[in-house]
Length: 177
Image (cartoon, rainbow, N blue to C red):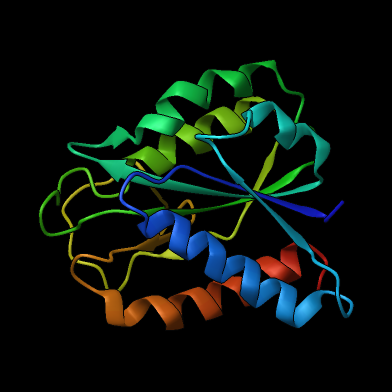
């Protein structure tokens, strides 16, 4: 089994595409030849309860409409309440539309982060809010997002650079580097 479980929900395919990029980047850099360090779980097909098997988690959480959880996350989030995640390190990435929904940009990240913390997980991979244009987000704490925020609608050209920089930080927090 890979040491990192990457769980994501995706409606239009953007979060799934980013999840595959993360897997590819981490596997290419840190896996033994022919091996893997990341195992992917699409919440439409797997139970979130499988997250309890991993010491390291990456969770992909898109925000829909006005600060809402994506439908796969909405259906699965209560499964977190049954897990003991004490000692687990979790990194979050989210997708949102900062211009279309500036008052609720990335809010869904907060809902998942809050549940993770309540179950004992340690959040890693916070990301600066500089370079974004939004007026409110529950996913912001102390001038940082609770995880990496991506905006494929308005800033797709920044995704690769943000993802690379964030994964260096996450790899160090996961003791890969």
